[in-house]
Image (cartoon, one colour):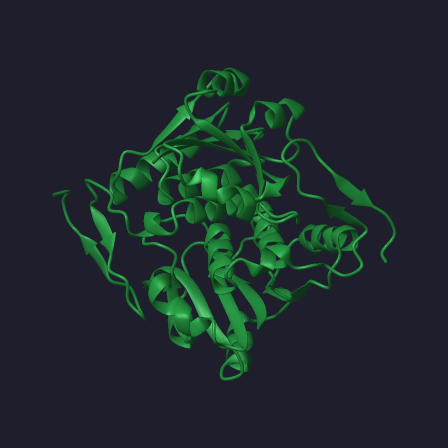
Length: 175
Length: 175
């Protein structure tokens, strides 16, 4: 399965840290890239630094129009809009696990109505307000049944060795 | 199972939105309260507004010292520190599901060493950097095996009816 993420509606500066967290989640939970409109260059820099250290080929791709992107993906990927108003993840996840390509769409705050129309699926991670970061994480975790957490990242200069107390980090040149 | 969350290390203003998201996740994923040190009053106000509209008795509790709080909880709750350096969630989750009380601890950025010592469990949601918001969400989702998403919230003035397209919100006075 190939996974991409589209984030729409962020406002530069005010949302920079939340945007960075959303991009880090996309990377750490198995997506290949995140598409975003206007964004502080620091967000891209942070993600490039993380990939340089921790490996993998994750991309932050800046786009001019999320509508154009959604239209271009329509038909080739299953577009899954995460929203507290959608059908429950329990209802949707079975068929989504069988897809080859997923484009997960998360919005910062209120999302224009046509996102609901352009999406193939509108899926809720519960009907309570929380965060696009948590919605994305739980969706990707359930979509891949947790397998993304043990995935390796190529060309990593740093790796964690899980342990019960303290930190064990393997440092070195990429293999 | 009773669940509380402790967030440590946030910096006022810079982290306000991330702090708000972390608190919203705690509420939406079944915790009773979140403990935090100094925080912008807006964070509490936002959570009070959300609970007033969407129901439930979630509390944001300001504390003077997270160390004192951890010491006071030691022995009565299982203290689970979420960190990318900990043992894997797959290894830990089985025994954690059998606990009566959980205190989940999340840090903003680098966490002082004694958190690792005071915790009963240091648990990683993958060994890649992401976000305390996503770590908390995935941990609580797996801990409760998703049941938190269908939990009702008492005295709600607003409820979502899940649907595939569009929004269906039930409005009214609390029952």
